[in-house]
Length: 206
Ligand SMILES: Cc1cc2nc3c(=O)[nH]c(=O)nc-3n(C[C@H](O)[C@H](O)[C@H](O)COP(=O)(O)O)c2cc1C
Image (cartoon, rainbow, N blue to C red; front, top):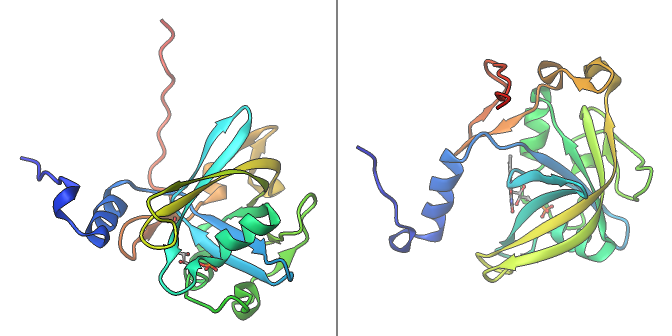
């Protein structure tokens, strides 16, 4: 027997919690952005994925903020039109999660948490040196669902300008070893994971 959820009878918080626990694992975009005054900002987002490769577009969904209205990441992206996505490995768990704390806008999380950054090539936003993958993006478009200043979201679509992959995680040529990438995966509640068993199976040719 399966328990049915029809969301009309649940609070926003409950709906979030239910979806979060079963649509797993989610990759994490550790986003670096800059304010107009060049204050850096670093925060994790797991409603994130690559959605197409031609053109190369990623999406991140950012909810409103109780006090600020708009989270710093979204405000920065809307103003500067650029950001970097850093894909963290499991070793970065503590810094990734700690960077989600509700720091004031004028605080740069990378400084407080000692996350070493390097300059972007095509964007002013910086790249997390220890993240095995960095993606430099420019804002393509945003789409709002609900009221983005309260319980709704703004979905940010970013066009990939350049993608950087640590030489050490390549098996050969264009083949990346997923175990060496060792991505931090977001589950529900306060659970995180690394990769479990890996299987191979080719799609049958008909
Ligand atoms: C692993 C992880 C994933 C998160 N994913 C999201 C997400 O997809 N969307 C979102 O709005 N907030 C997400 N958050 C919460 C934000 O990181 C948090 O609100 C953060 O303070 C935003 O920072 P900012 O105001 O500097 O942008 C996540 C937090 C963690 C720890």
